[in-house]
Length: 120
Image (spheres, rainbow, N blue to C red):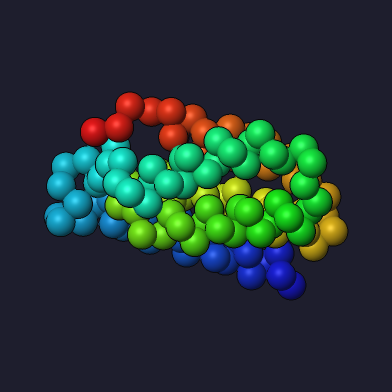
């Protein structure tokens, strides 16, 4: 049941990101390249998390990713927000006993890649 709820949260978040990217107030680019304070903090934290991850339990991974997810909600960067949502869903599934999902590593790498993109 929690997995279904997680999937619904992910779907809603991705839909909200897609809608905000097309809103007139978002400008022509939808703030995709915006590196505001929330996105910068998230990117700094994801670098540290990637270094520490091997020594963390599933619950500790969820706690750390949960902090990333919470911090990025104030960002205008739709891509980094969406990547953080996907990573949080993966961490939640792992903490529920599902083991690390096959997409966790890919989602972590996608978030790191979004953080590596040139900021405007």
